[in-house]
Length: 171
Image (cartoon, rainbow, N blue to C red; front, side):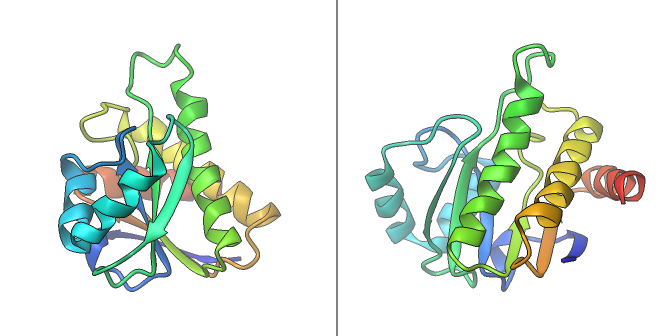
């Protein structure tokens, strides 16, 4: 099984095959992780994203990494938290599964995720962490044999603790 690491680290600095961008549906940049990835990758990323025509919530799209150390950026659109009764948990699970599927389809052996939907989109960290870890473990067990390394890139100790708790619970 793949090595899973949970780190407080800037995702734009990671030397992995793919980093996941917690994007908005336009894929044309924004704040938080999305803005940081666009700034670090350079203007060619915005040009590539403009060609994709957006991305619905729960789905994923892939571009090159351009000026990033990662070969690819996998863009996924997480759900905005509305209390949990609007399908947010399944949409968040789909973000992880679809991102991992794109990584495998593009021969990636390493991938880094941010905490999708946990920032401005307001998804509760503990619940999001369980979804992230469960989907990743399930995918790796069934379809992700080629993935050797998964990094969860955290922006805070709260997110890191939530992911560590989820991994300890689900391992």
